Length: 254
Image (cartoon, rainbow, N blue to C red):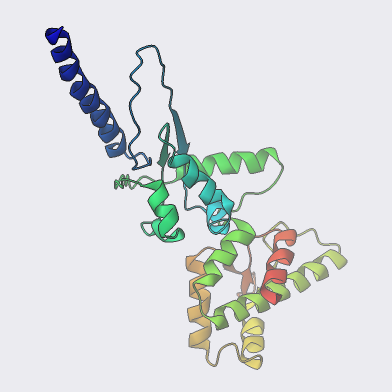
C-alpha cells in the first residue's frame, strides 16, 4: 500500500509537467491562447480535442473597419478558451494598436517576426483571377477602400484635389458617352493644366510646385495615372470604374 501511494505521488507532478510543457510549446509557436491555467483531467478515458483557427492578414481593411465591433471581440473570446488556439498573420508592425488592452490581453499573442520580403504575387494573382471570372478589370489599389485608406494619411488639400479630379473625370466620361465614344475603362483623362487652374481657383494649392507634390503622392499610391496625347498634352486619369468613382466622390463629399 505505501508503495502504491508513492507511485501516485510521482505520477501526478509528471502529468502536470507534461501539461505545462505542451502549453508552453504551443504558445511559443505563435498561438494566441488564454493565459489562465486549465486543470488537467485525471481520467485516462477522457479525450481532449482542440481547435486551431488560422487568420490571414488580421490587420486587413475588413478587420480595420470592424476593429471596434464584435468581430475582434469574438475572436478574442475564442482565443481565450483553453481548447482554442489562434494563429494570425499581419502585414503592418503596428497592428496591435487596433485593439484595446482588454482585447490584447484576451488574445495573449506571442509575436514572431516572420518577414519573408517576398512579393505579394500569389495573393494578388488570386484577386486578379476572381475579378477576371466576374468579368471585371482588377485594380490593385483596392478601389474605393484603397483610396479612402490612402487619403486618410494625406493632408486636407490632397483630399480636396482628389475630389476635384474625380469630378472632372466623371464629367469627361459623360462627354465621351454623349459623343458616342466608348473609352476603355480607366483611360478617360483630363488636361493637367485645366485641373491645375481649377485647383488654384478653389484655393486647393497656391503654386504649381505644390500641385505637383500632391500629384506625386497620388502617383506613389497608384491612385492616379498620367500620359501624353498625340499633341503632347499631359492628361490625368484615374484607374477606376465609373461606379467606383461615383462612390469615391460620394465619400469625399460627405
